[in-house]
Amino acid sequence: MTNSKPINMQYKTKLPFLLWASIVLVTSCSQQNIKEIERNKQIKDSIQAAQLEQHRLDSIETVRKKFLPENIILEKELLYDKYTLEDVYPYKDTTREFQWEKIRVYLALIDSMQSQSSQWGILKNRKNIHGAAPLTEHISKNAYGNMEDTFGVERYQGIPFYFLHDTTIPKRYGLDGSLVKITSCRDSSSSFITIWHAASKKEWKVPHKYVKYTSDTTFFQKIAFIDRHNQNITTVEKKNDKWLIRSMNPATTGVHRPPYMQETPLGIFVVQEKKVTMIFLQDGSSEKGGFAPYASRFCNGGYIHGLPVNVPRKALIEYSSTLGTFPRSHMCVRNATSHSEFFFNWAPLENALVIVLE
Image 1 (cartoon, rainbow, N blue to C red):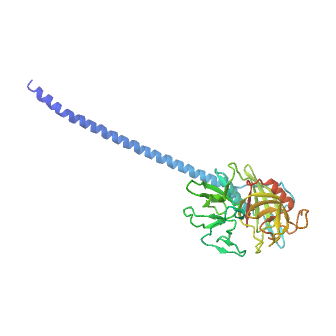
Image 2: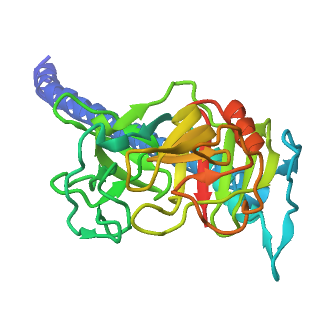
Image 3: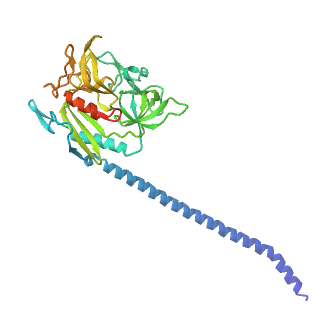
C-alpha cells in the first residue's frame, strides 16, 4: 500500500505530456501528409498543363500544315469559258502567266483565317462619308495633289490606323473596302475597336465608325484575283476542300497618270456595291463621259466592270484587243463585258473577295 500512491502520482503527471506528444506527432504527420498531397497535386497539375499546351501546339501545327500553300488544291472547272487564257500564254515577244503560287499563298491565308471563329468587317469611307481621317505622323503630297502616308495610301477616303497602345496620332491609312477581322469590340469607354488587317497581317486600333460588321454567317467562298503585272483576272470558288477555277481571262487595270488616272490598289477587298450601269464623267468636267456595264465596286472608286461605252454611243461593247495588254483605266479593272456580267451575278455582295496582286 505504501508504494502504490507514488506510482499513480507519477503516471498522472506523465499523462498530459504523453497526450500532448501524441497530438504533436499526429499533427506533424497530418501536415506532412497535406504537404505531400499538395506537392503531388502540383506535379499532376503541371503534367496536365504541359499535356494541354502540347496538345494546343500540336493542334496549331496541324492547322498550319493543313493550310500551307503547297496543300491548297486548285482545279479547273470553268463556269465562264470565253476568251480563256492558258496558265502560261504568249504576249508580244515574251510570256505572261497566272501566278498560281502567289494565289495559293492568299488562299492558304483565307482558309486559315476562316478556320477560326471570326467576326469580319469591311473598312468604309467612300468619299469621306465617315469623315476625313486625321493626319498621320508622316505625310506628304503626291503627284495627284492629295495627301498620302508613307505607304502611298491617300488620306482622302482613307481609314486611320493606330498602334494598339497609342491612339493619339494615326500611323498609317487603310483603304476603303479592305477586309478586316474584328479582334476586340468597342467598350463603353472607347470609340475604338481592334482589327486584324488582312493585307498588312497586323493588328490596329481603328475608330469604330469606319468599320462595317458583316453577317455572323459570312464565309468567303468566291474570290477574284487581279494580277497587275500580267494583266489578267481569275475567279475561284471553294467547294469542300478544293478551290475550283471558274474563269481565266485578260483584264486591264488602272494606270498611274496624274491628275485623273490612278493605279488599281493592291490589297484584299470585299465586293461592296453593284451597278448594272455605272455612269462616269469626262476628265476634269461634270459632263457625262459614258457608262461602264456590270460594275462591282471593291475599293474607293475601283470597280470590276465591262468595257466602257463613251457618249454618244449606247450599245454595249463586248470585247477589245486592248484587254490584257497594259494598264490604261482610271483605277478600275476592265473585263470583257460578258465576263463582268458573269462576275456581277456570281459574286454575292459583301460575301465575295477581290484580291489585287502584283
